[in-house]
Structure formats: structure tokens, C-alpha cells
Image (cartoon, rainbow, N blue to C red; front, side, top):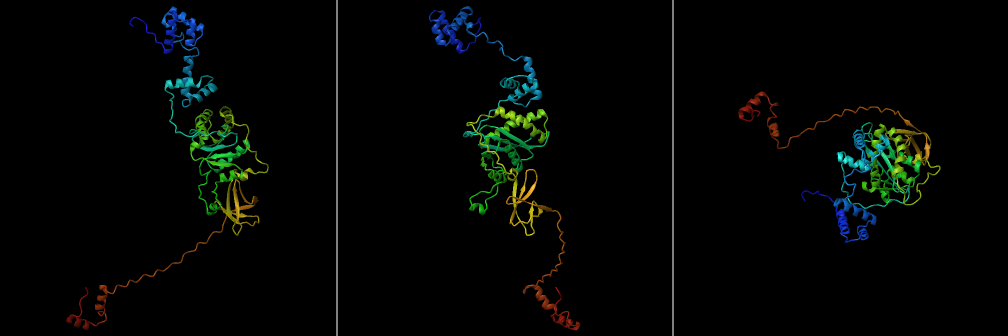
Length: 439
């Protein structure tokens, strides 16, 4: 209505105002109004008195339009936004709030920071429509299953070489172990798994993908088919010797826990190493020794059942003799074997058809027979072969004989006598028309 202030009220306030008017008109008791509005009688009395003095606007809460008591000062907000643009421009709100408190002593909740960044256009909500998948329950015991995989990424953001992070995450507790390597292969896996065993023990099972390092691409031989077995990769062979069950994932989503770990590390660890100026694999591995205990303390969970299924390594077991690459080669009559395009002389006397070459993680190479180490030396010089000149082969040209009806044969018969006749005979034959000139 013109000339009167417009008061904006919510439906809740309109409902309260309707009840309060009934109290003022003496058509409803305050105790009954308290039950209807689910308020105490004292609160109803206070609201009624305010509406009687101020009119309908007395129903509105006094704090409406007023700044919150815990509002962040504008000066502090401007400083946080400035620091985010300068130092943490690609950090997520949660990680940025942690670093602001850790390094700049500015405490701010991640939700508040997220709202500020969205308002400033520095952060965008990104919700993807996910494909429906069946949820798999976690394993119940620590050490029951270990998910292992490698993550190829530019971990140093151009400050150093590209490398691979070999990550281990326990399925029951999300406890993480990781280490950087130059590439993803048999030796990096065995090296990281050896360090994992020394720290925690031998797990009950390992969950791997179908990478050729972990799953042999070879086709089964006739012997394999007869014995109903599949060819094993060196990783599968080593884990079998350790009594570890190997499970292969058919899709990345099947081992989603380790995949999510890599996504988290590519967001957090990269920025942590950037702040510390790390640019080599050696520096990164030292950083992980300090960082992983803090990460596990914060993000690991309690297992459903108490107990640890990691087995301690038995005494007398040579872990290096298991976690290595083993290759069988035939022993020649001169007690030599060929390996990796090199020839080695066996110095020990041994009766065997095949010997095993073991390539260790530390770079050593051993030649063994039934577990016993053999002495050997590399043959670096071989007698040079004499060059034999090939004899010249004379080729006999093939004589082509014309066919019987070839025109050349008629000319040959008709004119073959020219050279044998005398000059007088030639003139006489020419006069008689018996001798024709050559065509």
C-alpha cells in the first residue's frame, strides 16, 4: 500500500504473526500458542510484547540485516585472497586453507575459503556424472590385501625429470607406502615391495592391474596347457615364491582406492614438493619418509577387525634371491652360457643341462644351479673369423635355338651356299634366277 513500508517476512514469521495476533485479540492463550509454535511460554510472552510495541515488524528477528558476530574482517579476507593468488593459485580450498594456517598463520575454514574463491571467480564447482558401479566392501584386516600400482606424471613440474610413483595402499585401513622411481617395471616394483616387507611384513594378497610387468603377455606352451597353468611374469613368480596371492584387476575402477590415492597425491604432494623446491628423485624419496607418516595419521581409517595379517620374513630366507629376475639358459659343451648377448665361462665343474641367471635389484648378476652359486667370468675377446673370399662362378650363356618354322631357318638354308660357291657359279645361278639377293 502506498505510503507504508513493505516488510518482507518468511512463511515461518507469517505463521508466528498470525498466532500472536490471536493472542492480542484474546482469542488464544499464550500457553496454547507455545504448543502450536513449539516455543517456550517465556519466548511467546517476549514476542507478544514486541509485536504490541513495534507492530508487525516486531516479529522479525533483531539480527536480520546485521553483520555476523564471527564475520572475518575485510582486511584479513583481502590478505587471504591476495596470498591465494600469489602462492596457492592452483590449490584446492581444503589444501589452501591448510597451507595458509601452516605457513602464513592465517586460520580460515575450507568452506569459507571456497565461497570466497567462487565469488571471486577463482574456483569453479565441478561435479561429474559418475557411472553406476557396484560398491565393494573393504577387507576386514590390515595386511589382508595390498593394492599396488604405478603413476606416470610430471611430479616435479618441469624442475626435474619425469618419473613414476609406485604406490601401495592397504585395502582395510588406507595406510599408504610410496616411493619414486625412474620408470615402472619389474625392478621398481621389486625394490618398493622389498622395502614394504621390511617395514610392515609380507601381505596376504596383492591387487595388481594387467600391465605386462605384472601379468605375462606370453601364450601358454604345450607343457603349460597339459599342466593347466599360465605363464608367469617375474613379479608373479616372485610373489608366488613368497606365498602371496596375486589378484589382477580388469579395470581401473576395480582398484579405485589406489587410483584415488594417485589423484590425491597429484594434487597435494606435487604442491608440497613445489613449496620445498624438490627437483630430484632422491630428494622426493627423502620427503616421502617425512610426509607419509603425517598423511597416514590423518587419512588412514580403522580396520573392521583387529589384527595384522602381515607375515614376518622367516629367518634364513634370502629376499634378494626371490625378488630378482631369473632366466634359464642351456649349458654348452664348453661350459659356457650366453646371456644378454654376452658369453660367460663357468669355472666350476657342474653336471647340468640348464643354469639360472639371477639379475638382482642392486645390479649384481649371479649364475646358480639348484640354488648354489657358481663361479664364472665373462669372455670379452673371441677369435676373429677369417674372411673367406667367394670363388668367381663362370656363367654359361644359354644358347637360344630358333623354332623349326622360324624365318631365319629358311634364309639359312637358301643362302648358306653363297660363301662356298665360286664367283662363276654365283653369276650362273644369278642368271638362272636361282640365287636371290639377301633381303
